[in-house]
Length: 341
Ligand SMILES: [Zn+2]
Image (cartoon, rainbow, N blue to C red; front, side, top):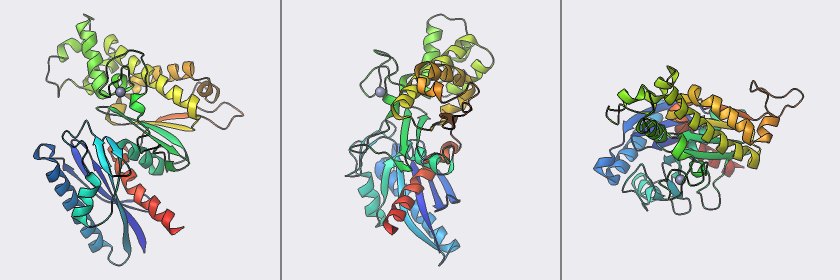
């Protein structure tokens, strides 16, 4: 007999559902579109039907030998952990103050665990991804915004009321670009995919000579962070300077975290982290400059300083878009294990 969990990653674009066993092995996965335009009730209906289809599939495949130990659901946005309400979600318009947990539980007739998607991505990476050898780690997810998650000694750090890990809103530029959160100069305004495009457009508007100018006339879908990245890798100085800014902002944010927490590992994931080659050099320069703890625990080539085993590691995520799915499945497995003690 083995246990498995269902993990759900409810994003603004995709709805992904997976069955994962207690050892972290993926048993089944489906990806559906999120019909945000059809309303939240419809999205929750789709989500619940997909969960039921997957538990049915598992019953058929592993009759008598597998047991479902729980369901974890990741959503983008701020969650009130006690009530299970989604307080606010920029990627799910119209979902503010919505009882996501209650709605799912009512339809399925069973308990689910709700958690912020970036927290779950961190938990997934720590379980079977880039952080699998680290007990504690911090993750930055670079997407439309910048999410974050903190795993301390194997456990997700939720904070006082479940809103910890909002690392995208740490300040990297005093009085900088206005942020959706109401503040100015947040990391999200310098290291998200959205910010990469904005900074490219700002450079074009300032009259800089760049290849980007001819590309920027394309539609919003076509002029994206990938295009800016490809331009930078071809040697365009203006595109390169955009990623220097990204790296500098990330280095500053991570350096502050290294100084505060002295964690062994920092993982950078999310779609826009695929621009790693363009922003990493500036990131490590800034990190070394602003964190003497980082500089003192890492050699120039990224390895540990001779004689000192405790190295601070900053790496790319390994699980791609699946990190949040693994994390969503990990939560009920952890809770189940705790109950069994
Ligand atoms: Zn902010």
